[in-house]
Length: 283
Image 1 (cartoon, rainbow, N blue to C red):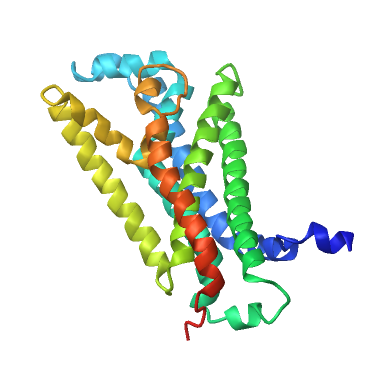
Image 2 (image 1 turned 90 degrees about the vertical axis):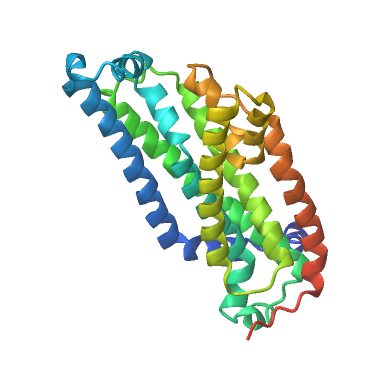
């Protein structure tokens, strides 16, 4: 009786199975992110050690000095918070979250799945924990590998602020979890096989729209100060990039957290009840 009660809401075997099935996807995405981080750090070292300041154009010299004086961690933080990296994290989290519910529909294996003694309520909660576990594993792996890389490029001198390093990666994890929860809520209310296209196209659209809005803010914010608030529409702005760019500590903006988390919670509550009656036959 005690064993049944402890597993009332989740199926640990299903979570382990979901993690195991995602190993290849996890490894590929991990290699891509770490390769980008390696390139960023290598560029920093090449520029700092091999480019004489007198050879630079006059307009680039101040930027070079600022980068040199700010140190490798500050450069790393700015690169890590670049929208290219954040978009990759968006796509990863979106795919993992939506696949948790829609993969079996896409593969027409839901009938086999529900032939086993598991309720839809238990399935909904279990699959949510599955995607959260995968996102956590991915972020922990990237964090540890990044720490090793950062130390190696800094001649294994960990004199940079370790607390800020973990604050940076913790903030990135928060962004990934918010995205995942939103996409999981969408998946629980949708039916279909093309969730991969939705995740990839959604990430690309978000990336380019953020780039366009950022350019607009840069050129027009002096005339229209209110335009600065447009940044809060984007999940990327959860981490305050302006404070990092000016040499400040990692900080969070509450506005994008509310803007993205509120619909995520609402969609998951709605999806929890809709999933009980959802037609899972996609044949």
